[in-house]
Length: 332
Length: 247
Image 1: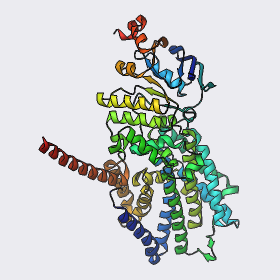
Image 2: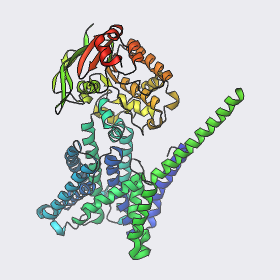
Image 3: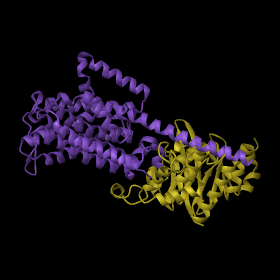
């Protein structure tokens, strides 16, 4: 995205933020629900983007962490705890479990790691379904309250949408800081060349565990917002297909790009709604669109942009070289 | 002169094959030690045993008199041991400058301070100096993967020096580097050796490069030390000529 001038980028960003605040004021209940869901799924996808896109560690368990966060929030808020406290617990819990899940990644990589995380995903689902004393089993947990902030109730869809949007803003800033910090650079080193990283003093073990733990914690935050958003949870939304959906959001948006999850979640959450008019065909159209995109650009939507920018730079550089060459020839 | 690195009776077996058989030597402070020998004689395996990439089957490695056998590569690097690789090992998608900052950042502060502190860990200036020193100025913002082979070799070497190491093990730094760039590289290595008092061990097949750069040369064959001495002594050694130089 380096091709844009900086002021233009800032103006564009502010316009998008203003749009996200102002435009939904006229939305109906359902529109606001979909948009809130987009914000929540973006947070979860950002976590997976950190683990997979930046640190290169495959995970098929992000949906399970959304589930862990959602159940933590549902259980606590239905017992009278405030949502912020539940979010803190969701972060700590999913961070700790994510850290432990990172240990297999120290021994196995790529599709083997995918299988390990897939097994964990199934395990988490079984806990949600079978431990009914805690999770309500297949009947789930209902009447999950929405929070009050500074005396303002967020029961209505619009105020709660702002809670989701505000959370997304905070998480985005934190992730932006993290990937620009030396930690972000170390994560990319894990992805690009772990052997070289070790020889440069980078503690690959600790950074791998951190990548898993922080990515999972973001999944936990998303879950802790998902519970009060739907106000009812059962185990089904947190099965393997959520993990696969989140994986698709990251890949389609562009793994390893900061804005990838925003776009990926938009496509995964909003596109099915826009394609609703096609009725029974929408899943097919959606699938074909994703297949075509990934054939055209395996690095996702932002990968297309990135390539276009690179092509423009190369063109500019060869133009400069051509000028320099003609000058050299005149001198001779 | 005291020994920076002491290697005693290092052995490495892969199944029934002995890749390194009972090698002992030491590296003196401030010297450039050359390590030569035919392909497959165990030079790189010896490096990997010293650097913790492989666990030796026996023997001991001492750094500044302290036993460091079995430490992990990252821990050894923090103690001031750095390396370059025979095959290209850079971070292709990061820019040249980012590669160098990455190479130095773990030597700055604690892990927590690197999370809350400056995004460049205060290393932009040091990275730029290194870029200037290796004449990579015009490439500083380019992704490392887009550089030519020789330029990536230079970057690989530059990365090894970012943490201010006292001992650097270079595995075939001259391989695939064109002659003019090679004399540049030699000049840089000599300068760092003198100015920073860094000690080097260099694996290399380019005889001219080794003989003109190194103060001592160790010759290996079939996993054992065949000879050790000044370049001119080694060159005349009949056993060395038989095993290596004669062909």
